[in-house]
Length: 167
Image 1 (cartoon, rainbow, N blue to C red):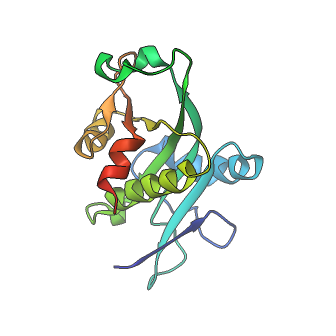
Image 2 (image 1 turned 180 degrees about the vertical axis):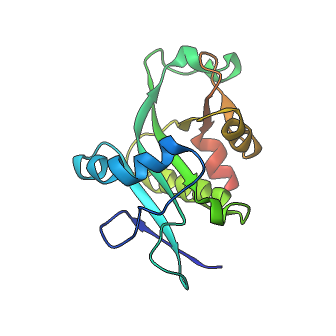
Image 3 (image 1 turned 45 degrees about the vertical axis):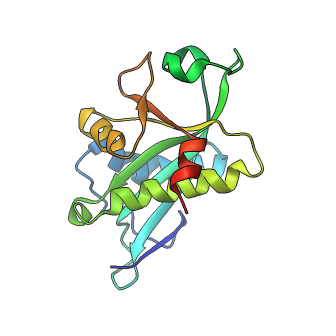
């Protein structure tokens, strides 16, 4: 199945979206457009090329920082003592009807590609995410994200790793 990714706008139906996690559903339905308009987090959605205008999945990104002390010891060497710039995956969710089709991986790769494009103009040390729960953490660990030291559900992946993996 082919997907069309684009920034959230009023042309899609968000009301039927259900990823199985009420907080992530509510974010898309009630807060994503507000945050998008205010520049707090930009939300991107995917719809099927052949299906209706229902949201199949979405992710939101914003800027963040990572405290050097939060990094595992082997990543701290040679880094400045002030907070390091990062792109944060603020939300990432796939509708229940679309789960198991590789869309989560596709969304994550979209986020990584976005970080690569942005890093050509703005300093970014890493991509970071606060996993919603242990299951989400396990998903991110499969794709090379590394737990931060001070929060068991917070992870990061250095830009140099992303640049080495993406074509």
